[in-house]
Figure 1 (spheres, rainbow, N blue to C red):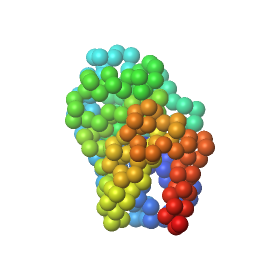
Figure 2: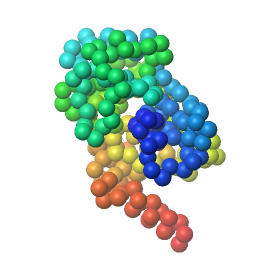
Figure 3: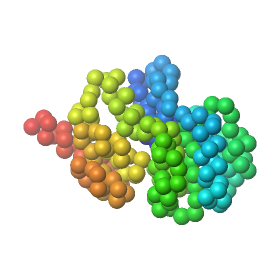
Figure 4: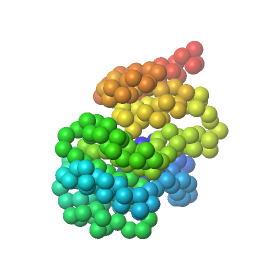
Length: 224
């Protein structure tokens, strides 16, 4: 369950052969064994064009990107951390490379931290879209219902699980729907304040193996 695109997730070591990969903040669920996409929730091109028009008017300095598995389109000047994979295509304006299928995610970058301009974007865009961020580099816009909670529920149903059987961990605002859905929600100590406010439990930070520590304690208590 990740905000990362499928092209990044499939390169991770140790993935089970029969794993279901929920990627792109819930825009895609991929069956690794069969190679089939079980679920997609993409924005149609007309919605993407409408959002871009709004963003250009309210923030002319905006830099945009688009995810459409396996492609990543970024506008010239879009900044990424050094650890990020490079885009598959760049353009002066995203509109020139958009095709018929629309996008899984529209990526929005403004000056400053993403968590600082997240609220502004939420207030200026139609409520039928999901607006969130998984890092401080940019915000992400997806179709209505395309979030980690929806994807986790769908994956859980295939495994015969309900929310009460699920433990979810998070650190950024894009994890909030998932934490609210899960029976047990856990934020790491270095999570964004919005996560700390909604989580049932707070574990130690990512750097201190907080997720592993919480699971170890759960397993010990369960077997006692």
